[in-house]
Image (tube, rainbow, N blue to C red):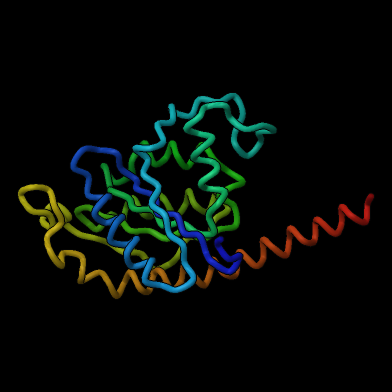
Length: 209
């Protein structure tokens, strides 16, 4: 049984392409997170959630009932479970992937009031994709973490068989520790605030009966 004090951190792989680098970076940041006491971490691979492109008549912020697509329902449930997120994102043409944007767009209240950190990779460490994601995160009422991991030239970090070279991500370990430290601080603070708000509403409803 998981304690209420445990923080649930979901790590989202933002690419579904063959030979993607995100699974290397995702497993690496997962291992860094699991070294921290009080964290329950899980990788969410968008390959496992084959959602159609968002084409619903009502925005997630305004819907009164859940979407019926099975993959969307599973995805929404996983997002609702989380106390914090880490997105592993590539950079495509100064932006992030379409499949990641689609996954973000299908959900709204389940993202709200939770922190999000980033592991980005690309020619400039995925910095331009990350800046776009920060803006989207704010619109989803999330708290984007200041420190992020920027992995440069990821194509040089894998061997001829596509495996991650030994120690390839070791130079980024200190930055990852800083990002995780900030993520945990915000996750604890926002979880406490969400809990307090739920209790307040519960008391109000009880008095109104």
